[in-house]
Image (cartoon, rainbow over all chains, first blue to last red; front, top):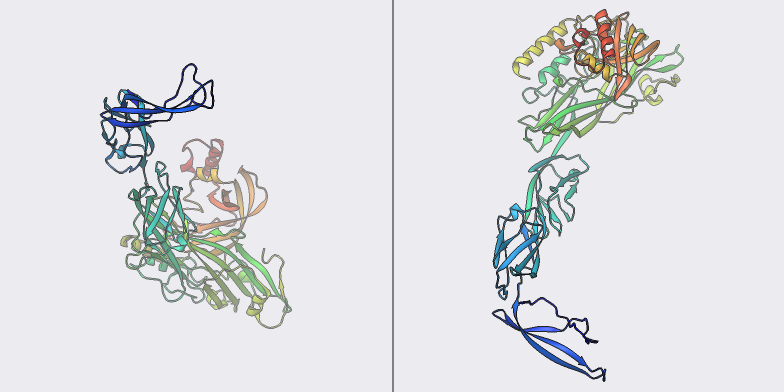
Length: 464
Length: 164
């Protein structure tokens, strides 16, 4: 038996150009019942007359084996339970067709075989089909077992993240690449990479169903949810503390100040731990979490960082205003000044999906050298706060999701020497605004406090 | 915080408000608390984290400022180092510390002028003069810290005794 695929070559003694060692042009004329005729086109050249070529045909009959796979190349999805390969109708394999593959995984006997892509390692398989008795006469085809697998069912990203990514599992395979899309629109891309990056800050908060398709086989795809979480921060510096149950920490917050009033409080009020001594202006920072109803696996926590300086502004013998540093903190690196979690509520409320942080920042005018200031002297303090909401999923690593800068300016003036703070200090300014303060003092700021025309001397160390 | 906890919290705060918590004018702390700064911080762990641990005498409490709710910050507490357990500090130095003021049952006290104390300062991402923990310098606490120093990697040993 011969193989239709074989090539034929003239060999033997006394065979000369042009036939020696070359393939003979040959063709099958018929293949019926495995019986075929091969016509060889030969050229005969006389040694005596090299130019006297003669073409002639030689016919030879053989029993011919012919195996041809119907599918030249086959793409199957790794999620499919079954896939099929078969040989063409003109296949003649008198001993039966045997199927093998490299790597191993697709095999069988017969004109048609089935195999289970879901049980195969994704990748390219070279499949060989041959007459069982003539293994050297096979046909081959490529079978690509495609896999598109997003290993997570849903992920959460923060809307303020500059970059986020989604990756396929390492065993995903699609030689033509992948096509990413989302509903609603916003996350898309295509290419050979198994990772797609996107910019959460460009996306409205909410749920996105992200689909990744094989570029080779569009029905071979996987999906996951991307949830873009956003926390919009708002400063509340008037009115009262948001009450319970909307704000779970209301009682702790109001008790820490002795009042639920926000904004500048009368001198001496606003700190239960320093009764009669503080000059405070309680605020809330409120975070609106969207979309609402985040799952319990998402946790938030509040952070507060501070850089501050305060100064004494003293009449220096009545001829001059002298500015010296009173205190500083978080210079140059802001201090973590979050304090106890008892005083904030990091769990989004059911009704409004909001989280709450409370602060009753202030100063104690009479503390330290304050009690020795003269009537008419001032204390100024600038506090540069950065409030941050951190989040994590499933107990993972905390990362910042939203931040807001708040600047507090406190100015008070010594007006008496009774020993009672409320009587001795005038509440001139205690403001909180969404600004970034530099926590340094300038001549202009001093002038706006003291007025007049007396010279102002800022000590060289005042802004150290 | 459930309702019972909130009521308990309010009760403790009421107590705190009825008795002076801290007196900024005098620089004295009139609370009768059981714990000093960093009381929740295990001594062995604090010793390991700190860049320096030493015995010192408080010369001046420094300037107190209200911190976040339930916390105060002491800046520039002046101390005089008398003995080093870890690292080398000498003479007078200024330290900063944060102290819990509320809730009352968790509040901490601040060492007074003249107190002999064992101070744990510094550590990773912590300023070199920032206090992690303070113990009163009692014979028991000195022995305990000395044992920690001698067996820094050993098991639990003297932690209980080191609590102030």
